[in-house]
Image 1 (cartoon, rainbow over the protein chains, first blue to last red):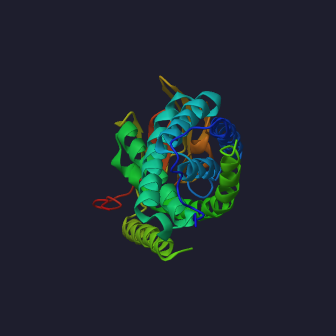
Image 2 (image 1 turned 135 degrees about the vertical axis):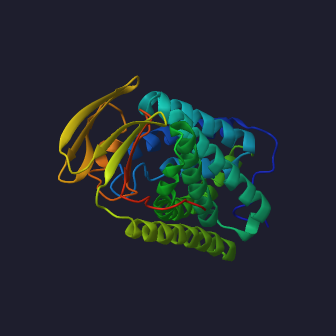
Image 3 (image 1 turned 120 degrees about the vertical axis):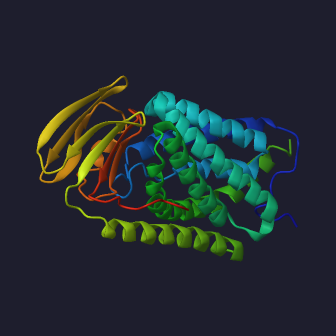
Length: 183
Length: 123
């Protein structure tokens, strides 16, 4: 029996895959722009919902690493152009790449023993850590680390919520992905 | 939720809470008297403002401006031309160890007390 969260093993990229990746990228951009209008700065400066991470995690489950990496880099580049400005690129890229690496490794190492909730929580924590470390480097101020613990608490909550979303999107999108292979 | 999920969530929570407790302990020990706001641009200390003296200064870096206001023993960024506005939303800060950062302009405002708020930060 094929389990729900097994990662895609097929090496073929179908037309459905290409369409799905395009839709996911569009959704990432909308989610990224939307969450910029909901600043959580009153909790911790720089905190965000992390909705676009739901899409990246979905891609980690559905596609090979290459596709998830492509989505992540395009997300950072396009969101910087559309909303963040050049300085936000380095923070969002370092956070996103660290987060993607953690989620990729966890899904591969633990496979069936971990659910999207745990993967997402770890990814969110790594995203925060990556951003704060980038801020330390750019501002040449190690004191920026003081932002990390409260940011971790907020990202834990949003990470778990994102994980619950992904738990429901992956089986549905996998059904769509499979429907393209029949033809 | 599976067992590893719970372990991951618990691990993050414990680390974050331990670090926060450690930091707030250091903050309580510091004296809020004679607090000054140290302003760093690009990692270089450019201003050191005593918090008991009201004033307003306009910081212009090559990347944009931040209007900084010292009043009622606290410091805040009242206005900035960055897109994120995180520094403006940070509000007024008065306690040693508190910080306001403007990432787009590479500006950090850090409050230091009579003594260092904590000797070191380790994680």
